[in-house]
Every structure is written in structure tokens, then in C-alpha cells.
Image (cartoon, rainbow, N blue to C red; front, side, top):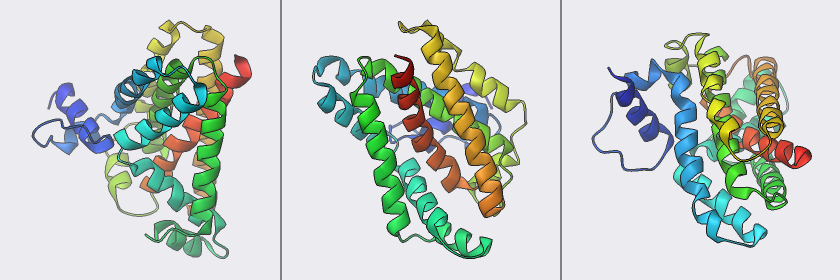
Length: 240
């Protein structure tokens, strides 16, 4: 199975884009380090219309809307589930049950609104909104790749399927794929600080998942996309 088939499977898994015939999912499962490739495509396409929207508030709103649309809201759904799991009181089993419940509770709504407001406020305050969108989306996908590789699953599912087919060195490749971001017309220190914030957030999510749920699942990986994106926006705002 070629790397191109892996990219097709990745895009069918992470986006709503019509990629043609169904790709072999194993082609991506065996190369989950490719996650940042989806970040370049999603972030790049979302950034294009922002070049023609001069008002930052409108541009930030359109950006977040496009990012949710292009991903089919799959990662946002994971964020809502994580919010419910975090707010559940009781044993680890109770938290896992709340995390896995398809109903959205107050915890999910609160976390979803909070992360969205942070993302919107930070992005609207930046003068480089299109570039910030690209950087954040690629970094978020590198975070997903990392949790996929190192996050021991606490139950069977898509995450466990990807986890058992990944290798620890996939993490290094995923972050190496963020290298082209340093070619963007912004200070390299800003990109470095954003990637540092993304990696630190990934570690926090990893250890939190281990402590609260006994491991990682697909909801946590998806939530990482939304949370890391918000952290990257904030990181760029602090530096720039």
C-alpha cells in the first residue's frame, strides 16, 4: 500500500472532502504520522477566503466555521464528550460512561463554548489570521498523531485500531512534518512557541487521560485537535 493511498484514507477519515473511491483504511493506520498532511489541506483551504475578509472578527468567525465544516465536526464532537467526562463525579468507570454517552451534558456544552470562545477571541486579535489558521491546524494534527501513537487505549475502537498499528517513532515524524511552517512569513520564534504550546498541551492531555480515564480513546484524540488549536492561537497572540 502506497503512501498516497494512506493520504487518501487519512483525508476520508478526517475531512468531508470527496476523495473518490473508498481508500484502504489500513494504509493510513500503518502511517498515522501523516495526520499533519490533513492539517495543511484543511488549514490551507480555510485560510484562502480569509485573505479577502478585512475585518478580523468576521475573518475569525468564518475561519472557525470552515474548520468545523471541513472536518465534519468530528473532533468537536470529541471535545463535547470530553467535557462530559471531565465533569462527571465518581469513579473512573462513571467518567468513562459519561465520556462515551452520546448525549451531551452541561460539561460538554461548557467545554465546547469555552474552547470556541478562546479560539475566536485569540484568532480575532491576531493580524495574521490566515497564517495562524494554517499553523494551528497543522500543530493540532501533530498532536492527534502523538496521542494516537502513545495513548494506551482503555477500550476497543478506532483509536485502539490505530494505536496497535502505530510505532513510537511515528511521533517524531509527525512533528517533523510541521517543519515547513517555519517557511511562513512570520518570525520563527512564533512558530516555535506555538509548537511548544501544542506539544505541552498534548502531554497534559495524555497524562490527564491516563489519570482520569485510564488511557486514551478517540474522543480524547479528537478533543486534542480543538484544544491544541486554541492553545496555538493563544501562543501566537502572546508572541506576536
